[in-house]
Image (cartoon, rainbow, N blue to C red):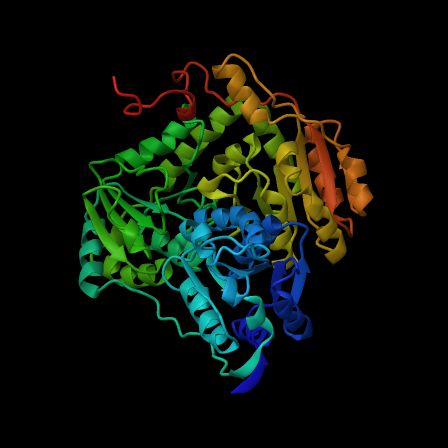
Length: 562
């Protein structure tokens, strides 16, 4: 037992859980916490310019480090501002702890008009957090932090919330600190593993569909071992990009594409549809089940709610991706799954066909992507915003190192990429980090250039500028007879960056990125590269498919009764 304030108990509990960085904004109702962080040598605080950026940075930090990210905000409006980052983390199953202040204990739930008061504060983010709890007294803090980290490290990782009234941060009482929870990995029973192995071994055309759960369980090497031991090829979801190197002979790549009419994308969907057994590993199937309805789905997932919701013909294996794969492999060898001939030739042919359509289409995205690829080190982390380049990258950017491809998942948060990239760089200062964004998205959090310069977070940011919300303008022009209020008034991004003390560069042509990006990495400062870019059409394969209708541009069956 030790006599501690609630803020001191919180800071020491975070250090005990391995936390080294907290992203946030100091403010009223959290002064006791901020003072304790100041005085705790094992932890540092990175102050952001907006609460939204704090949770985005915590997300990026978590995804690059493999450890939970932590953010700190004032109650009420601070929590609301931080919620978009929680939404992003929720969609990508990222462990983020948000610590929020509260109004004084005696005012909670009274509707007295206390500063920053909102009714049912935890309820405002309940749908985008896995767990919430209030620590009302210093002695409650260690148990609350213990459970928060246990929640993030067990089952499906997602954001959690701790709230603390201001007096709890400064009051002092006897506190018993706790050690981190010992976490046991979930593994399916031997009977279930043996049955699944027999089904897989008897398959004619099995396929592995790998999602982000592989990375969350640190299971990349286990996945590669599974594919190589059984000669079963792998398709990844966009969230699973990098869990097997794209240049591996058994990797088809990612099957996600918002441009669903493209012929080369159909190649991967045909692969999925023709499989008689699909082994889903850590995949949420958030856009529906891409496997054929006639196939058997062997579904490995830590989230039991995801196990059987896709199709009736499912063999559920409730367990951690890495440990379940490792436990399944001996049963697969026993069942004869290791005698399958290699499909590498067929995989190579499919990938060549995809590359053929890329070259044939000659859309601007393809050439610029190739130029960037030549200028960016293979081990660089790249954070993609919601732009046409970001959409295109979900399928076409080659990823050969785990966790280096980062996007916003199904949440599709415009503007999240710059602060998220800063969080990635804080976690991995030794690795190059690139933010790929549009001019509209960059301005959502452009004030974080101040944060980047203050703390020396040297991210290279590429801004594709068309002075418009370009995706929206294109859709309105193509489908609704004309764009409306999509034009933007931008600063001179080079001078804007320089005004913060960052380095500004400008490309006269997007193809210059091949040389500008390596030059940017040589600078000992954050760098912004302004890249003027014209209209960017959705890539289409001519004469191979009907015109694609975006689902949000037309009434859907069942919405309006006939």
